[in-house]
Every structure is written in structure tokens, then in C-alpha cells.
Length: 429
Image (cartoon, rainbow, N blue to C red):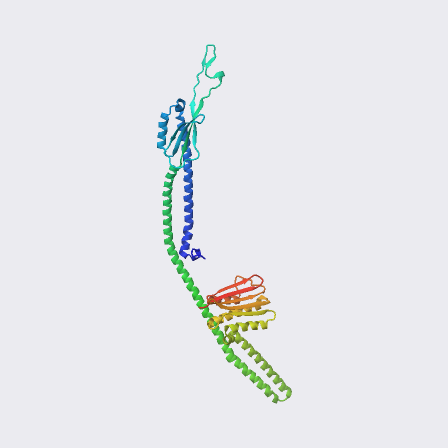
């Protein structure tokens, strides 16, 4: 990515570019069209003037060609050359196109390739005279109409567009100057307006960022409060409920022991059986309470650390689900990680594996936990039926997203119909 890329532009620069770029393009297009139209005007004017000059000079050259006296024609042509700086030269030719006269004009620059030519015409007057017997002795013979005109030469004018182009260029420069001034004025106005808009936009962005940061803080506090409440419930279950269950089991065992002294024997056996049933029930409740305590507060996280807890979780998943094989790979050192972040990582992996078991119908699942480049990376893949993205995620996915968002991380979930991949990156403070 080069420094000149638009991604490095500030918001104000982007606003100015969006505002002024179409205006500049439009003005340049109009200026270019104006330039081309002026070129066409010069060509059209030059063709009209050249044709008119050739015709006028040809009409005034009849006497010079017929009589062979060119002094008067030279004076009149020089007057025309002095008056019109666009004429390069004027040439007079006879009927066989042999040059009779050539005068150079004041035009400077490259002459046009084409020239403008008009015929020099001699007008004829015929008189018919008849003898006394009626014969025509002079004039048109046999009653045929005599010709009225005769071409005795040609007058050729060659023009140059440089003078007209120079005049049009001066006008064009004035137009360009006016357009430039207008663009500068629009640029100054856009700069002034963008300043206020950019200030307002930056304030809105800052407010949104502050709101997002506050949301992250609230999510972290919420997750912390939830974990603390779970810990409190786990302690109550462990310290009170489990203790009461142990006491009930001991009492039931004592009842079973005392039942042996009761008469008759069938009553004693019934009491002992009920006592043993109570013992089994309390033992089952105790084990359920222990499992609930482990789910509410993963003791293994405190005993083994994050790496060991994740590995133990994956091992238990693999042992308890024979239809799906679970593997785990851990890279990096996770000692010294913040307790809140460690619990979030543990819960995220726990929820991801729970989704694999509940929904994926996968044969293989792999967990990658890595710490590198100042961040923790979590990658969970399976070869199941894939994740069907909907307008709203389930509770599990939503909870994972909230935990990742609270830690200012990134969350992506990809599925191609042949498996699902959850990729999470959590930056470290």
C-alpha cells in the first residue's frame, strides 16, 4: 500500500476529492469542447474568407489578364494583403494554368495545404450584322447562340490560420482564466464547508467510538459479574448443598446400620433397602453438584492454567463422544494471562466445542490455541454439515461474539457446506 493510496487520506481530503473531482472533470471537458469548437470556427471562417477573396479578386482581374497590364492589379492585391494578415500569397494563372503574377502576403506561420481558386472570366458581347440579301456577315453563325463567358485565367489564394488561431487563443486564455478562477472559488468554498462537516463528522465518530468503548467496558463488567456470580453459586453448591448431601448420605448409611437391630427381619430389610436407596440418590446428587460446580467455575483453570484446561476439555470431549475425534494444538506461552481474558478464552472454546457436538454432526474437530504477535488466536474447525448463517445467531454464537467484542477482538465464522471454521483474534494489552 503506497502512501498516496486513498486509504491513507483523511476524511476531509476524501470529501474534497468527492466534491471537486466531478467539477474539475466537467470544467476540463467544457474547456476542451470550447477549444475544439474554436478550431472549427477558425477553419470555417478561413474557408469562407478564402473562397470570397478568390472570387472577388478573380472578378477584378479580368482586364489585367486580357490586356496583360498588371500594375493596377498589383496595387489592389497589395491593399488586400495589407488588410488581411491571414493571406499567405495570391497567384494569377492564365487559362493553361501558367503563372502570370504572384504576390506574397504578411501571414506568418505554416500555410494551409489547400488553396482557394476562382476562374477569371471574360464576358463576351456578340453583334449580328446582315447584308441586303439577309445573309449574316458577322456574329453567330447559323443562328447558334454565342457563348457569353470565356475563362481566360485563374486566381489562387493560399491562407494561413495562425493569425486567426492566435486571436482565438487569446480569447481561449481569457475563458481558461475565468474557469480557473471559478474552480479556485469553488475549491475555497468546498474547503470551508468541508471544515465544518469534517469537524461534525469527527465529533460523531469520536462519540461512536466512545460509545463502543463504553459498550466494551459494560460487556467486560457484565462478563466479570456473571463469572463472579457463577463462582458464588459454585461455592454455595460446594460448601452448603454438597455438605448437606454428604450429611444425608452419612445419615442414610447410619439408618441402614441400625436397621439390622430392628425386628421383624422383613421390616429391617425394607428399612435397610430404603436407606441404601437414599444413599445412592444423595451420591448421584453429589456428583451432579460437582459437575455443576465445574461448569459454573472451571476449577481445572485454576489448577492447570489455560493451556492445561483447554487440553483437558478437548480430552474429555474426545473421550465422551466416540463418533467424533477431537484434537488440540497449543502454541506459545499462556502464563501470566489476565484471569478475565483466560476465562473468556476458556468459555469461547467451550461454547465452540459444544456447538460441534450439538449441531455439526462432524467426524473430526480440531482446536488451535496460539499466542503470537501480541494476540491470542483461537481456531476451531470441523468437517460437519456446515454453519447456516441466518439473520440472527443462536445464543451460543451471540455469547461468543459478545465476549470477543468486549476484548476488542475480531470474530469470523466461515462455512462452505463441508465444515465450519471459527477464527478469533484477541489482542493483548
